Image (cartoon, rainbow, N blue to C red; front, side, top):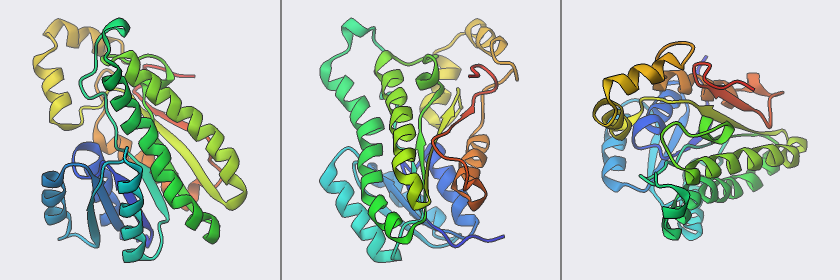
Length: 254
C-alpha cells in the first residue's frame, strides 16, 4: 500500500540516511532530505528526484537557526511533517581515550548527535500536536545501550543520551498521539568510511574475532535498519512508543 506521509530524514544525503530516504520515497511519501554536505545533497536530489517528490535542504542540525529555517521551508513546501527521522550523527573520528579527548571534539559529537535530535524534534512537535499525529524516530546505537565496539566514550555517551530523550519525550508526547522511538543499530557497514575502517584498518584476525562474537555471524546491512525504521514510522506501530529497537545481530540484548 502506497503511503502519503511527509517524511523528513536528517543526514539523508548519504549512507544509511540516503537509503532510508529512498525507501520512503519509493513507498509513495514526499521526502525532505536534510544534510550538511551540499555536494551530497545535490547528488541525492538528482538521483531521488527521478523516483518521486523530494526536497533537499542544506542545514547543520546542531545550529538552531539553520534548523528553524530548514523546517520552515519544508513545512511551507509540503504543509506538514508526519514523520521525522533523526539520522544525522556519527563519531566524527573521535576515538581517543577520555583524557585525550579535546573539549571541542566532545562538543561536536554531542551537538550533532544529541542536540541535533532535540532541535529537529522541537521544530516538528507543535504541528504534530495540532494535528494529533506524528512519528519521531531517533537514532541511538548499540554503543548507547552497552558499549561502543570501535568508537569512544563521547559517541557512547551521546547515543545513551538520545535514549533518555526518547523515553522522556514519549511520555510527554503520547497524549497527542505522537510516538517517539529509537533505533539502536549494531555494527552496520554503512558508508565509505565504515567500509574503509572495516576493510583496511582491521586485520583479518580482528574481523574474525568480531564476527565470532556476533550470534548471526556477520555485520548488519542498511536494508535491515531501513525496515526497522519503516515499522516505527507506520500506523502499525501506534502502540509502540518510548522503545529502543535493537538491530545488532544479537551482540547485545536487554
